[in-house]
Length: 587
Image 1: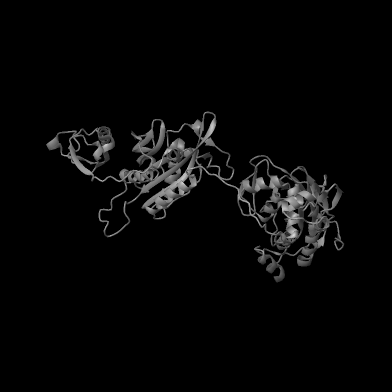
Image 2: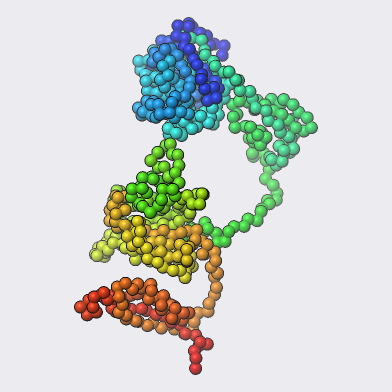
């Protein structure tokens, strides 16, 4: 830049770049005697127009150049730089760094740091500055940095510390290494105009391995094929010239062009053709007269359609869909929810939230966390469902299983003057909703087994041999208390993958409506307390076979004085609806 001129060399700094992979180019210069003050209106208005909050004339000048040229800069208080030396390097794992937002961060050994002469971190390179070396109202002398950092290093540090700054977003997408010096000179002249001062050192420009423009080979035939229209070679050359893509060679309908370093994402032939099309204009590509369509087949039944159907069914019955994180805490499964061996847990390296260190092995914990979240916000009567996945180590691989979970808590009916008994939800209310889902999916003929484990105080499992379809029950009061859940919670875990397999085997068939009415029979039985209704229903189904349509328990009577101890219930009635076909009647 012709107007740039060094005024004196009274504040010269030594700069050392130890990690040239992470920092291929580093430029800097000192300014002396600047005055920190509010920026003029024209600068503040321009920054506000692009969503940037004005700070002061120095910081605003660097932000202006960032949005003008696409090159991030950073200003240091030069008097805070120990030893008048800047070192670009990494620090040991766990080193402490106090950033501009007042948060002390533990550094990774892969965080590139801008350090002073005593190796104290002043800035996470390309990401965020430090609180001690930043520009303050009392700052008089500054050191201005303009560098090019490797995108991968910046991306990892930015995500690791959850610092999504404008500078980090530019660097992680690939900045132009060959504009660093020009941007520095532009910013210096702007700062002198806004804050006064003198250029008090020569520009430091450490660029050991200059990055040359990439070369890409393309053909006219491929250009026309991808764009879908014939573009004259001269038109293509004019567009390439307008994009500063010089033609290195041309032969047999093929071109080799150099891509400017400010286009870090243009590395393939298709990328160059996309740039050509962008300049040529999408509107200039005519629509074809014939539209070709490919036949697409999908799995039947369509899993997405089935999922939407069941979701609509649950919503129609008062449920709300939730979406919990697939991440969880190993501590919970070691201290609260037992029954899952540690070797089955899928551990992850989560640097942003270190406590969330496993993929959830069950839907229970995330479901109870959602219940607590709602209860803490005065939402006490809950009907929730979630489609999600669980993850476990099994046989040397990670098993990923799809689920549909249902959760009930609070009162069965909404608060109302008609709801006088204020009955709470229980296992049987949940069971009714599970049956509703299974009937909708046409899943029938399964076994029922009572379960009691670390999660459920009591419940049942629907299964076909070893294949589990559903597990439902009331969550253990011990688990609920440790998870800070108030009141009882009923939960059902439907194994979605197994239900879809069952659904795929179902065949829809038509059966003529019987011309004969059904008949109801009430049976009163006196049985032991240990006898389950499901056992009685199984006996009835076996005896009635295809004549028996439905079996239902509608009343329970308990009176030890009349029936004796351990007898339950009387009358325990079974309602049996039978249909009789004329062809089946024996004379």
